[in-house]
Image (cartoon, rainbow, N blue to C red):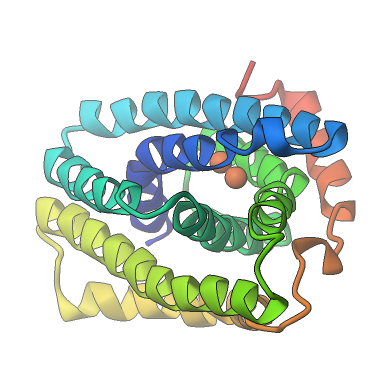
Length: 248
Ligand SMILES: [Fe+2]
Ligand SMILES: [Fe+2]
């Protein structure tokens, strides 16, 4: 179950992360030197994630899975997102970056995040999770900069409305991609989905763990760093250093 869930996520990452990069990059020159540096670092990190997930997705293809339909679906969703005004694109990015940050937190607190997966794959996801936490405030600060002339109420309404829409689309696309993998394995059955439900809600229970952090996004005073979880990074970084970081 874990494999299908994380493979489905990975299938969308390269195109999604390129979109995130483009949506913040256009504000880099407006930012103060501190935020400008953070945006540059964010772009470097996401570009590296894209590179690693392209390689990982190639392994999925080499294992015999067809991913053309998933790629086409993601391309279509991203093309639609690119039609939105720049602030709308940034609001989409902060919504998805919130998902990645809270899922990263859940992953790093899990003793066995991907049961049965090879160690290198677990390390890839842990490395990605660390960097998602490291840069979780960057897009949000860029959003505050981009919307500085709007009232706090308007800033809040835009990001909450977009988050509602993105939440639906994010899980819809992930469910769709998982179904695609299950169909190719000949196991797209109620029994499989029951196991998915148990995996996501009961044990390890990613949905259950991210429910409250997810809802915090809708609070008027929300900021990603209101929940400082940098302490999670050090321990996993030590493990990665001992093994050799998958990013090389
Ligand atoms: Fe990323
Ligand atoms: Fe990110």
